[in-house]
Length: 383
Image (cartoon, rainbow, N blue to C red; front, side, top):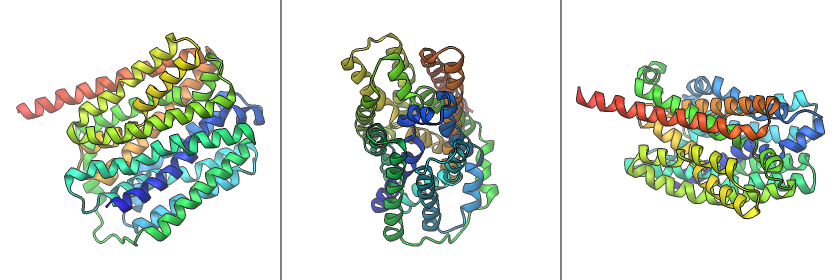
């Protein structure tokens, strides 16, 4: 149902604003707390790691509860995180309070997607899922660059106030716009866990992990890379993030249509960016026009990554949609955590100029996983 999909997208916007709004202000936070940019990156990687480790279990645990109440509780935790972070607490408390909503982030996504496609025709499901995932692209064009801009003209604490406000608005829409949806028939844990014995699903999971690790090994340090390697001013980062996001909105719309035609082709098309973008960053000049072109292409190829990952994994396990979605979110966030962490190590040991090579490495592995799944599916058909 489109109404539910749009409300789910608004909540997703809140989720992404909190999780990734930190990217544009990491240099400011590192400066405020007098820590390295790699240590400040823990605010992103630790969040993602909690999602990766607890997501599937939390989704299974809460799968029998009213979907509306689950979504409300999830977004309420994001609201609390924004409020507390705005007080500039000690760094260790800032890390801890960032972890709170991470426990329910994949639960929210899986629940919002499930609610959006209830009663929908199979041909419309990918479109409805793309509407929910449009919250990611809209966040990239609006709230993520906005909080970066606010931080550059005011201070980074105010940017967390803006994040809290977004969460509050989403909370209101969920509260008054969605009906109560009690679960009439709860699926058994065993019926959902069966997908873990499917080789094609496991390969799809590995593809998801490598793809997201590829993107976030460099996207997590978006601001720092452009400031350090391309001599971009801190105040210009928000404009680049805006361009990145606005192209991403278009990409998400196109991806939804392409996925209805061919999940594998659409996934490979956008995945090619994990090779193209780092090569462009490595060998391009420092002119603003060139940087703007690369940023626009980057935003186009990156934006549908989570939609592609979820759809690709669900295509190998259509009968366990919520659990498959939670695994997609968890392993995607494990990719965020690993990509961000390894890039932080490379930055500390060798320099930020080398992290595009890590993106290429992970991107190549994800393409190999898609190839391996195609081979296995072909063999299964020929049996």
